[in-house]
Image 1 (tube, one colour):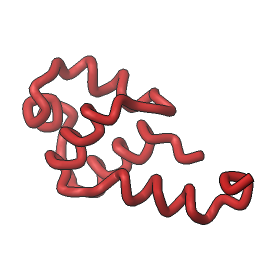
Image 2: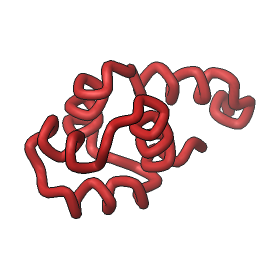
Image 3: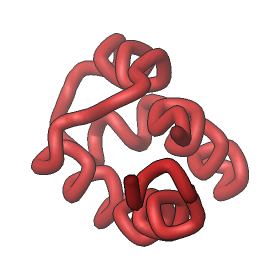
Image 4: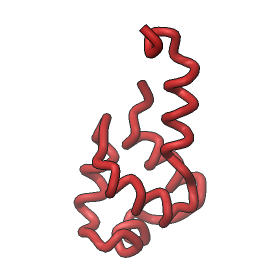
Length: 74
């Protein structure tokens, strides 16, 4: 299963944006962003806010992984 925090960190870095920028974009403290980076799972409402801020559908990424995982259909 994808590590959602790592996916978010990678996307933020790829876009050349800062932790401070993301914290402001989703209206939270900068230290919370570092906490998010360590998470393997995340609340869907928070993931929606992050997806909108970064203009990337992380749900699509997770769905693709789910659909390609042969264990998921068992």
